[in-house]
Length: 145
Image 1 (cartoon, one colour):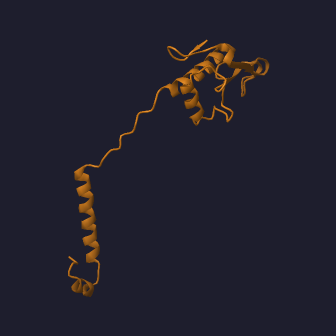
Image 2: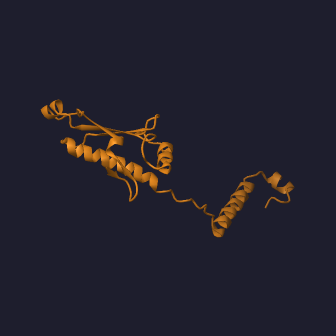
């Protein structure tokens, strides 16, 4: 039984755990013993509430396949039991993360002083550009300066 929250519990029958050989360096122990854990959890066939299922399936995560299966591989530890605990902990964290609804974004407004400052700098920049004109253009334009 994997406890997700106070009311949500996953039975062990829904979680498929397979021991496989770990990758990488490690010598004789890695070559002989299957210590890595390959965890598979089918979201659609699970007993999770629909709220959790929908959020998990919408989640853009490399651990969730197109079929809606969560695949987690744990091989950090030397013992199979610690890797099993690590894989279950990661599954629990992933499911708990979708339970928290994201905060609604409130659009912010620029302050009045920042708006005025922006407009003042635009006017100043425009006056600088007017001064770069030729003299005869300035003489003919009454709104030049």
